[in-house]
Image 1: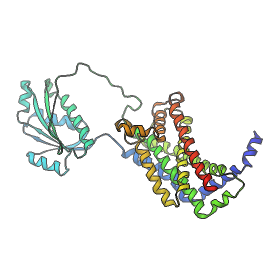
Image 2: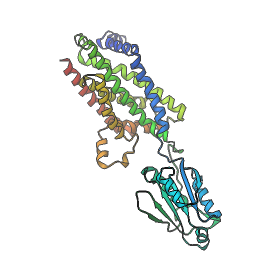
Image 3: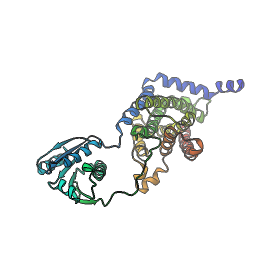
Amino acid sequence: MNSILDGIVSSHLWALVLKETREILRNKYLLFLILVPPTIQLVILGGALDPQVRNLSLATVDYSHTKQSRDLVAELIGSGAFLRNSYISDERVLSRQLERGQLNVGLVIPSDFSSNLYRGKSANVQVLMDGADAYTAGIASSLVLRTIHQFRPDGLTLQSSVVKLSGKSTNDSKVQDQSAPVIDPRIDILYNPGQISSWFFIPGILGACLTLTGTLVASATVLRERESGTMEQLLMTPASSWEILLAKIIPLAVFLLGDVCLAIGAARIIFGMPFHGSLALFMLASALYAFVGIGLGMMLGSICRSQRQAQLASFFINIPLILLSGTVVPLDTMPWLLQTLSLANPLRYYTLIARGIILKGATFSMLWQQLLLLTLSAILVLTVSANRFRRQSV
């Protein structure tokens, strides 16, 4: 064992690794770029990315002025999606506020609302949606329909109700609730019972930060050597080109893994995110994906002529990787062509692995396929970058 350690310590690779480590520690800009931005981005994006619709504005034109109409408005406010309700006396004022973007939802309750309920007839209400934000309008309309469907005024059974939805760029539509459901489901939400959005987004954001940081820092280290003229000196040393390449990869990978630990600790403290799986398996997957990011950076460093070009090319590559990974937009909502393209995206597999380990406690036997694909991605990217680096040294 001692002879093996002595061989490692006395090798060219070890000397180059120590040299690269000292270079990173000496360069305050690179050290800051590795450690600080990923954690800050994870905290900001983990709190900002939230698909749940909240704090919507509601305005009501109530021609009924009865307890039942006020109870219906109270049910909508109690759903948690609406921040407030304001009563307006004129539908024209309601329409103008929707046009100006001052409202998200407008509700018009006719004068015969309560009388129709007591007679067992359909009670019509009109719901006006601001369809400029299609996502918010879709979620809000579903919420309004569900709330009206469940509305039971004064213990009466609402036999049927018609809700007329209209957005500014869509035609009016009618949704008829025929009868109460026969099956009464009992839903248990597993792994994230509180449906906390940050728990879902943080594993993917962590992978995105590894990609951005790895490509930017790795390309910067290669181009810095070339711009300062020390790359030629390195290539003239007795070390081979693969030893030089590994010496640049290993320190960066170690620093990025430290960044992963720092980010996970911050997520647990700030967002209360659990960690149910194996830390060793998670760090293995993170190391594999760190190699992918570093390999992409090395490739850019060998292709681009300046750090500015490498930064622009890095964003050109990283943004599609992030968008096609399921980090921000669910893969199931994408067109089939984009879903097919995402199969070649290593960030997709890292996001699946990270979410499985952190939230579900998934084991190696459950994730071996994703780990295999991630390993193949790392090998492919490092091989291409090594060939580019070797061609540069010739």
